[in-house]
Length: 159
Length: 178
Image (cartoon, chains in turn yellow, red):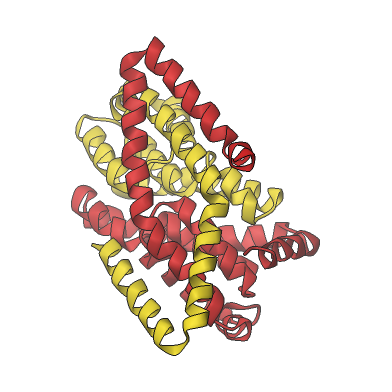
């Protein structure tokens, strides 16, 4: 639904742009295409790698790992899986709900949800195209650390 | 043609790897292709508006305007706009990076760009509505209450750790984006 909203919003802007200046609109379209084409090889490569990783680490495998491992090891594994995968929220949240229902620990599940959203190890090559090494590594490292902290606090509040 | 092959060589290598997987482990190989197809569809669906917005922003928004609303002296307004921009957008996080690129190009403050990336990844309203329906409102609201200060803190620390020289390099890179 938000995607539709974004299309409508973009098309309205594009129309306004066209009414105001044809040449500038043409330039905007060219720029849009060029910035897309520039990053496309990297996008495709990462998409394929994500496909391979998710086919090995399927939701079933993740639930098996997190369901059977408790304690510190489970939390660390959740952090590793979450950091190294690019799973969209509409997959992680139902997965988290199902795992919780089956008795998985709250903290590892929140670590998984949090790291899979905030940490992007696989997307580092894309981030490096626009940022520097230090900012990329520091940002992702901090996201991992804070994911654990958030999980512990949420575990205390909700547990 | 040679240029295309060179640019896409990693893509070809991974496709070949995937095909080998398909031969050796048909179920995992097939699963991988299916997952990639779903993700590719999602990516192609969200890309047109995102990149069109990047183009429109690049052409129409003056650097001065952007500096005023999200630049070095934009204060809390800049922070709020960075949060909102990231939170209302749809699409996976890797699409956020080219968008961040154009924000940098237009002179957005470094920490605000980091906030934007954080918001895009963690406090996305479109996905959170779904999150609340699956895990409950309490879960979602507590997560937000914790994530928002944490994202600010991550931006603050990253901003402090990255030197002026490195930031200049990042802005220089953004300027050359086309």
